[in-house]
Image (tube, rainbow, N blue to C red; front, side):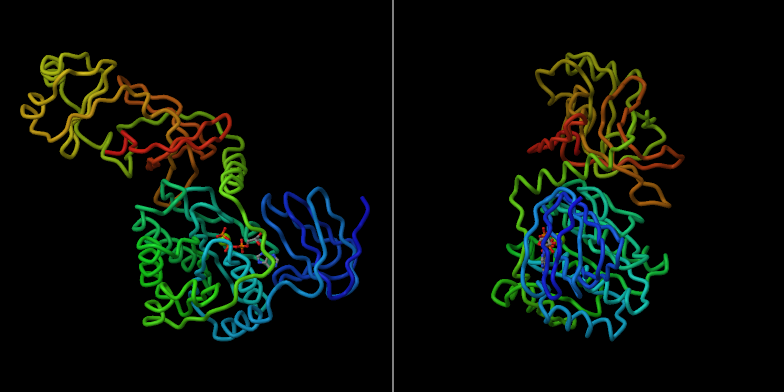
Length: 423
Ligand SMILES: Nc1ncnc2c1ncn2[C@@H]1O[C@H](COP(=O)(O)OP(=O)(O)OP(=O)(O)O)[C@@H](O)[C@H]1O
Ligand SMILES: [Mg+2]
């Protein structure tokens, strides 16, 4: 393969998917030193800047590339990273708008700390565009060496949010990032970096950032952006914590909505590699994020009574929370009588098909995220759920129910307005 010569003091920007090998010379990517023979993969829809510290030759497999004179990493970033690293912080949260350079700055800070011999963990709290962990989840990894990309930080654990946007589920994001930071520290991390989602506007974005930082109690909050763009989140947070404002990256590979979806598809393919169908007994598997399957099954007599009142045949029924859930192929004409007899405020009629292709996660006490799954079948009379997953089955698993569907053949995301299985 022909090698690209990068003169000293120039940057080769490589757009993924690509693989880059340093054939000779010495290059730097976000502060990570790459010597001869090191190899880096560039994820699709992302770009990495390879800055030549001396005349270097790079072999680029696939991908587009172009030259920029000088370094694309602002010197203000380098200074901020060095200043922060010199104080040996315990926790640092990175905040900024979409496509501002949050992940890139986090990578630079990680490499600066690792260069100082610090054991660093990263909590990737962006549920939409993940570097560490699968979509719809938060991810945590422990860095063992410097990395060109956060995607190279080995995954340790995650926390399933159930949606690839934190909207409406702020509490799960906040709890998850704190849980993962604590797990990282228990695993030996001296510094935890939290790379957050680019949702900093509107009520929800502001609430999320404030709650995340208050929960994490960081030593620093770094804002990547122009003051005018982030002041709505910066000001209140600066009342509680030390804050730093760094300029947004000038050379950025922005991603469209479609590219973001395509990137998630790429991640699903990876997280479902080697997946197979497993059968879960619902009686022995607690289900989180819904009341469904956590109630008390109706007795044979009660089912008969419900069939009579509703005028339909029932394959399974349970009373859960304030709801009577029935699985039936038929639609009852009226439910008022059943509501009053069973003292519930709602009768939810499901056929079972509603569960198909629903995204789930498997969790356990040891590992908050054992893996993602897709529901591929439900047997109401046996109380069995079939799940397509790469997670290994073990005793004591919890099933966490997501709020969207995923086609297991194409990994197309199917958004459901009001998911009927989330009771
Ligand atoms: N200083 C830089 N020089 C060259 N490329 C950069 C620089 N900063 C960021 N990029 C590239 O631009 C893209 C967007 O940057 P990054 O992923 O850091 O932004 P982000 O704010 O984390 O975005 P998101 O909102 O999607 O999480 C990435 O492909 C990244 O590698
Ligand atoms: Mg990011």
